[in-house]
Length: 165
Image 1 (cartoon, rainbow, N blue to C red):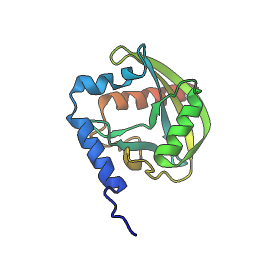
Image 2 (tube, rainbow, N blue to C red):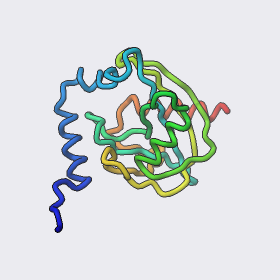
Image 3 (cartoon, rainbow, N blue to C red):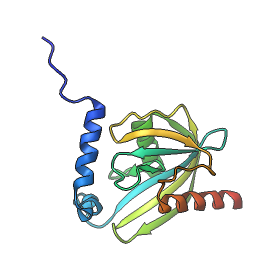
């Protein structure tokens, strides 16, 4: 007996994204504090291919501008590099090489510590999670116009640190 499929991944992604965007800003900002009363820890990565293009993801849960660098939250007891590798496998089915921590920063609201890496991509990124609409390579001088100023500053900071090393 064949059961009808009620939701395909694309429909579920759109539904969850629409619900997330309808939530008040303070709910979205404080969603992580439900499980972490003190602070959350995230990882992010500035990822490059052989042509020195940067990988950006169009993320369902980024309410204003979907484009941004890949990353996610650490699980309890998880090593930051392991968390980054897990997130990349889950979201875009890739592996990374030449991984290097480049900087950290803290945010007051939400209470968050962010750890940033630089790495080279192994594989062809393809969205493999309902959270990701698109994965695309961009030349550094052709970043998407809707990329947030914060994401642009993170990329610039990562590039300036790379030039110094």
